[in-house]
Length: 287
Image (cartoon, rainbow, N blue to C red):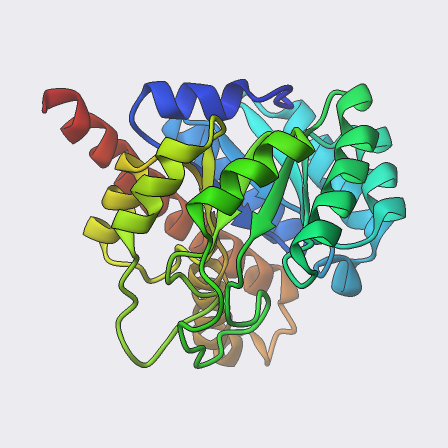
């Protein structure tokens, strides 16, 4: 079923866990993520977002994600990721998206507030919740580049002012995390993250969770992260499966077998991520 409201985040916080948000680019990836949610019985968020539309087309990917969520037995949120276009935000919330992420992180602080407030004004009447970003998260959302953890980290005092002035429902933070993979280990600034948690009344979001050591993700969840974005791990799984199967299907032109292998690999990767969060939830419950 399609998730509505911020309950999906509140429930994650209450369980001392986080809901995984999986990036999807085509039919098979959407199907794979929904299948992972159904296998585990856990809620997930499908990221069918702004940059992803460049591949599949906005209307097509929106329709695929929303229909798959509505028809699923699991709780599925459908989320617009990293959007800077208010018109696109309005289209998605009117179509039925559960949530949107307005990305004004490239703007000066005051302009980021103005853009985010405008997104909130569009989304809330339609029943969608809004995530915004404060700080600079390096790397590329759609390609695994050798990103360097640099740039402005989220300031706790600014975060408090930002949330109060925008009415945003969740805040994506920069605490040493990166989009994609790096050649050196990523070390999250958990002290900064804990300070942000104490400063704001809304759930926090961690972008760039792919490849992070389990203890880093667990530490982030303990510091109020209720949503983690996962992209690179799914793309790697899909491409590795396709590369493995391709030589065996070229002679028969069995494209269905190729797509099926990619879909199954993404399901397996998504189940692994969901299970890791469940394990953290169970450990937290015994502490």
